Length: 264
Ligand SMILES: O=C(O)CCC(=O)C(=O)O
Image (tube, rainbow, N blue to C red; front, side):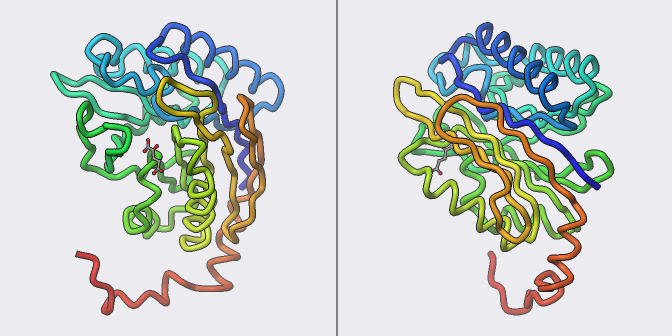
C-alpha cells in the first residue's frame, strides 16, 4: 500500500495564532494542489510557537479552534492530517497536544507530549501526557510522538511492538542540534524497522533558530526525502510493504531477549 505525504516545514509567527492559521492554510492548499497527498504533516506548536509565557492568552481551549480549522480543511481537501501539536488548555492546565485528523474531518487521536523538554522550559508551563500515541490511519497501525520524545528509544519501542509500521514525529528542533535530530530519526527507523515521517519547523524565535531538515526515512534507514533549512513543503511516497520485507530479512521482533532487559 502506497502513501503520499506532504510535510509543511513552515516558519511560525511567535505567539500569533491568527497569522499561523492563515499561513498554514495557504501552505496546505499549495501542497494539495501540487501533489495531492494522502496525508499532511504540520510541526510542533505551530499555532503559537514557543511563546510559553503567554499561554494564558494564546492557548486553545480544548483545542476547539484548531479542531474546527483542521476538520474543515480535511473534509474539503480530502486529506488526513498529522496536524502537528498545539497548546491545548484543559481546565487550568495546558498540554502540548498532537492531533490526528482523518479525511472525514474526525479527530481520531490526541496525544500529549510525554517527555517535557527542560532546556526550553516546557515543564514550567506545560503538563506532560500520560498515554501513548498509537492509532490506525488508512487501516495502518501508526504512532505519533513529539520532538524530545525521540530521545527515548524505550518509549518509541513501546509504540512499535504491535506491528506498527509508520512513526510520525512533529517537532520544533533547534538548528544547533540538527545532527542529533537526523541521527536519532534514522536510528529509530533502523532499530524499529519502520518508516519515519518527521516534520520540523524552519525560522527562528527570540530564543532559538530552528533546523528544518524534515525527513522521510525507510525501514532500512535510507533517507527517502529531506528538506533543507528554509520554509518548504517536502513531499514523498512510501510503500508500506517494504516493512514486511525488512522484518522478514532480519527478524528483530522475534529475536528480542526480554528475559534479559531491565527497563524499569
Ligand atoms: O532534544 C532536543 O535536542 C530538542 C528537543 C526539543 O526542542 C523539544 O522537545 O521541543
